[in-house]
Amino acid sequence: MDYIRRATIGCRLGDHINTDIIYPARYLVLFEPEEVRRHLFEDIAPELAARLAGKAVLGGEDFGCGSAREQGLTALKYADVELLVCKSYSRAFYRNGINNAVPLFIADCPESLEEIGSEGDLLEANFTSGELKNLTTGASFRCTPTSRFLIDVLEAGGIWAYYQAHPEIYE
Image 1 (cartoon, rainbow, N blue to C red):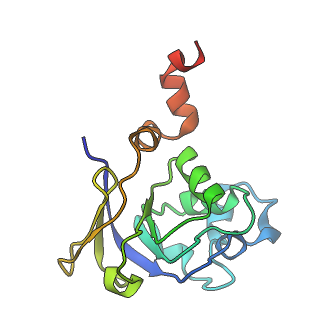
Image 2 (image 1 turned 135 degrees about the vertical axis):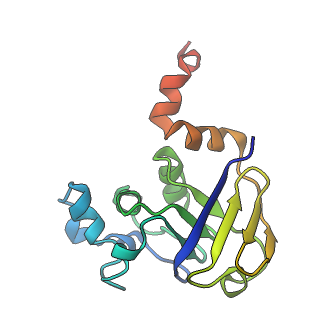
């Protein structure tokens, strides 16, 4: 069965968006979801967090670079971001996202972000086949499929839920 996510692009960001841009380090002492959500992308666009619920973030290369801390992902999750579609992610950010059931699609197709879509376009990401569609423009892009194991972790609700559902792993 295919793992597919659809969401309207809420913002399009460039390359090398680091974890301090996603969630400023000065707020690492906050833990309440509403407080954390409020500071998402605060230093580049303070109003952005309020309009990302149920939306997709479209980003460039090396999204989530910088610190390996999970607060950037937590802030995206608390802001109810439905989907991240980026050209590439830092390794730690990507794995933290999968572990926390944040759907991170790798749009490693040769087309540019501008060709993939603009704010307001509806995207459909098929993690199983690797196909990314812009349902607004009709464009389709071939990307690398996500491994079955990572899709299973996403479907389970994160790595902890996956391991709880598969006790045979511990045997």
